Image 1 (cartoon, one colour):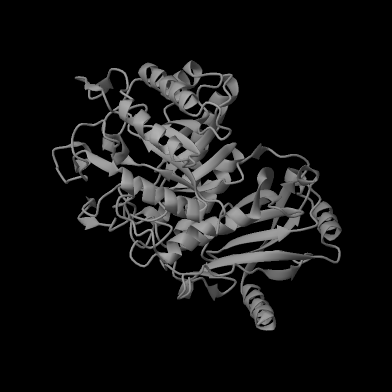
Image 2 (tube, helix red, strand yellow):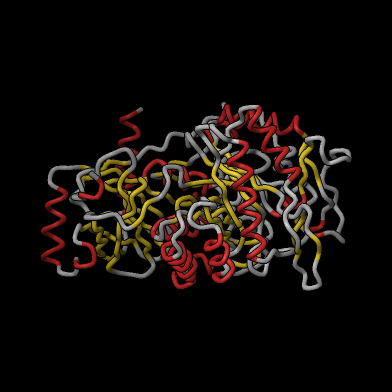
Length: 522
């Protein structure tokens, strides 16, 4: 079996080296880390949308809601366990219309019902405590770390400008938090509200009032978890970045009344957009997100808060994404670029919308088979350590390069994303960062770090060369969960470290370079 794998890897690499190629240099500065992520940087979301949530005439959620998801599915359990741990954020648009069946609401605990005259097209819904118990039993079994998004609209009054006023009524939320703590259910964090920041989605809350509500939540958590060694984090606002609004909330909750500042990303536009693939493959379009990450990092640094930044929800294309784009191979170009870019700006965690559901699920909502982005996320989680290194790429702008200290292993992991469908890039790696422009320097350095060693490469390509394939190949082998629901092993090919890395057209490569000189990683 090992021999067959080895020979398969050799054949795959031989194929890579055929055809037209361009030489390039990736420079990695291993002297110091430029940022750091959490150990469980990769996170995914679970949502509340019922089966009759439809966009543009397509209903893409099926039974993927937290209220009806099949928790007995083997692939679902194994897909989460493979991360050990995977952080899960529970929430989404309907969380601000969700009440909890703790007995203090007065009425019966009824599900969401479609009603086009209501915000987001649904009535208020309810989470029964027996379902909350089932979910927590599953989370414990799977080893997931849970962040729960609370309903932040209780008690508010509508104002003429489309916003809501008045303080948050936390009675029902407090009941759920107390119940959860009393049962010993481990919660990593409680998050207040969904997309109520800035101009809001559906409605909005002013920054001054929101800050007061965050302080109320912090007080609630402190009281309920008093003496508990694993006190949950307090997160907010779970909305779109608005510099003025975010700054006001951060300043009013400093230094430590808010632990995590969460923001959402849907930078590709609506799922109905027929130009999504063009945007994903356009480096200038991808770079459009730099300002958001950079601005939020600047606000956190200058405001005297201990709060850190997370991407709390990101599906790329809003209104449930687009079938055969956001659930296919091509989306890994966008997704991995987002992970790399956000990490550079000190984002501690990145929550992908969604684990399952919509057209952007990491898992297929009907079969539970992992989509390509699931494997991209898992490889990132296993190979990219918490320390972020500066990486430059001297060559085409169609290659994106990111580097981290390797996870639980010596050396570095370099991620190369080739947005070009025409050119194989032969990439030499140098430890001289941005100064690796002279051939003399680069060849000397490459020889130095390659002497007699091997590196491990993970080449990701699309089945049959189709960018819209829902099957990803790793070193030429299809990644598919087996009949027992087991996630396949992610095996590298071993390559002489003196050779350049061959990055085929429309491919992604993780390269683990063991003996790379990186003092930051020791």
